[in-house]
Image (cartoon, rainbow over all chains, first blue to last red; front, side, top):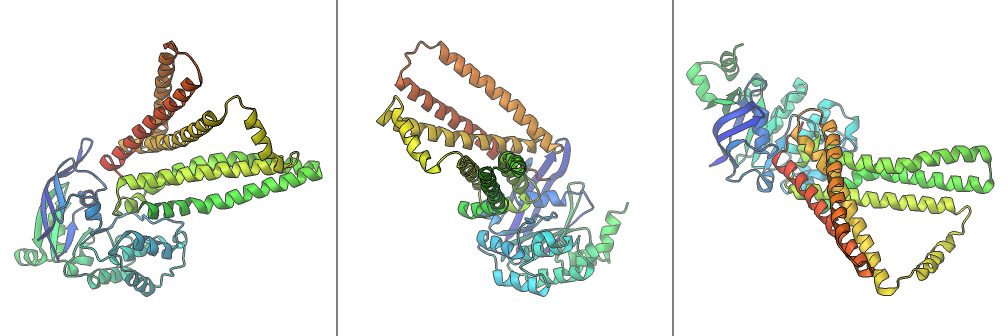
Length: 231
Length: 252
C-alpha cells in the first residue's frame, strides 16, 4: 500500500514554480532517498506533505488522507531548521513531545540522549548547533510514526555523529514504517537506501530502487547522481 | 490540546513576566518606604526607576504577546507548532488566551503597585469603603447599576480580545510577502486602523442623525451596540488570521 501519493502536485511561489506536476507513489516499509541539487524542490515537497504549504495544484495524500491533524499524528518530520524553543531544557522538550504525540516513546528518547551524552537538564540555549540538531533528530526518531520525513538530517553534524544518526535511523526503523530522507550527501546514506526519487528544478526525473540503478547503470547512486546532474 | 498548548505558552511568557512583576512591586514598596522616610535624593532616583518600570510593564506586555505569536508560529518554531496534531484554531486561541491572561495580570500588577505607592498618603483600608460610598451616591441604582457593570465588563473583555486579535491579524498578513515582514505588519496595522476609524466615524454619524430619545435604556442599547461592534471586529480579525495561517502559511 502507498503511504504517500502525489498526483499532479504543483507549487508556485508567485511566478516561480517550485514543484511542477509531480506524480509519485511511495510504498510502505521503504527507506527512500529524496535526491536532487540545491533548490530542486525537495524541501518544498516535504513542507507540502506536512501541511506547512498548500499546493497550487494537484493533490497529495498520506495514508489516504490530505495533510491535516490525521496525517500529523502519523508523520514525524525533521525540518532543515532548528525549531526548538531556546528557553526550554532538553527534558522540557521530551515532555512536550510526550504531551502532543501519542506515538512518542519517551524511554527510547531518553536512552538515545544518554548514548549521545546529552544532559536532559541542559537548556537548549547553551547547546551547540550540532547538538541541537541531534536533540531534534532524537525527538523525531523516538516517535513510532508511520512516515518519517527527514529534511537534510545529516547536513550540519560531524561525520562521527552522522554515522550515529544513520545507525539511529536504521535501528529505529520499524518494517511497517517508511522513511524519506532528503539530502545531497548521497555517498553517506547510499548504503541505507532502498529506493531513490530524483528531482530537479521542481520536476520528477526518476523513481527507482537502488538495486535497479546499480544493475542498469553499473555504478553507485552517488556516481549516477553526479552524472545526471553534471554541471 | 488547547490546555496543553496554553501550558507551554504561559510558561514561555511567565519566565519573563513573573520576575518583572516581582521587581516592579519591590520597587513600588521601596519607593513608598523612601517617601515615608522623606529622603529626597534616593526618592528622586527611586521615583524615576519606578516611572521607567511603569512604562516598562505596558511595553513589555505588548511586545512579549506579539513576539510569542510571531516567533512561535511564524518563525522557526512554527515548524514544530504547525506539525503538531492540533488545529490552527487551537494554535490561535492558545496565543489569544495566553496574551489575554498576561494583559489582565499586568493590569493587576499595575493596580497593586499603585495601591502600594498611594499608601504613603492614603490609608489603604479606606479604599474599599470609599468606593462603596461613591457607588451609593450614583444616581442609578440596583438593576441598572448591575447591568452597566456587566456590560462594561463584557465590553472590556471583548475589546481586549478584539485588540489582541487585530494585532495577530496584522502579523499574519505579513505572510503575503516574503521579505520585510515586520514592516508589512506595521503597514497593515496603520492602514486597517485608519479604515476602522473611518468606519466607526460613519456609524457614529449615522446614529447621530437618528431622532432618538435619550434615556437609561438607550444607554444600555449603546453598550450592547458597542459589544456587538467589538464582536464583529473580533471575528473579522480571527478569520483573517485563521485564513492566513491555514491557506497562506509560508514559514521563513
